[in-house]
View 1 (tube, one colour):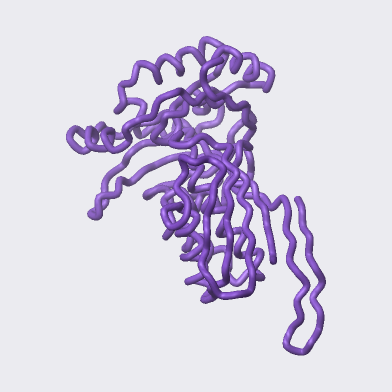
View 2 (view 1 turned 45 degrees about the vertical axis):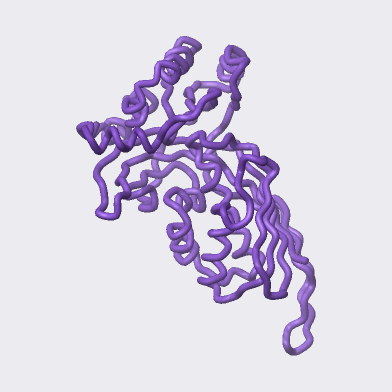
Length: 305
């Protein structure tokens, strides 16, 4: 059985604003997303036999089987590749759930990248991104990773963004945010667009001072605001909600400062993270020896990066 394991890196939204709404109800966004080195581990085992995909997870709160986004990603991939092998997908969960860090999207991206490797790369990069966009809004970014300006519903990946090197401290509180409720509030009384992206992208002045998240305004949550202010008081150059929450992050000049600040949140999940230039990484790959139609043997491949 062929097998591959990948790191599925989480993301942070360094800037996030709502710019409109499509006819189908989806809201349009403008955001700068950053991959970080906090990751889930996604393992895929696949045989040449035709069969269904199964999905399992180390965290019982995450739905398995057909309800998991990874199941959807695998099925969309097989449809695009026109091949339907039996596969087993397992997620070792490390990224907090419902945090606004794209954990599920990152897992789905890892499935797409992993299946493409195991199956001999039947899809091009652009085809993989189409599968990713069909799977979920942030999945295309999680395939590509790095620091990117994105628009649309998060699937329109624009240019790479150059930012000064920093360290991120993620703080996940013990409560969840009402994303649907926030969108309802926005639809009833839309906030004016911040139009601060140009300032954010301006070298020296924008990052991290001009970080912004519209959901932080919509929630009006005193606990979130309190974490942001505490991070700043502990030396963060800036702090912000990520995605639709409820995780918050602070931006620090060096790792030790972030480590020291993390100690001040003993009752919350914390993680000191560094930026990544990609969204997934293959950590192990085993492809069994096969023979082609002429009887020539293909060597076993083991890859680790």
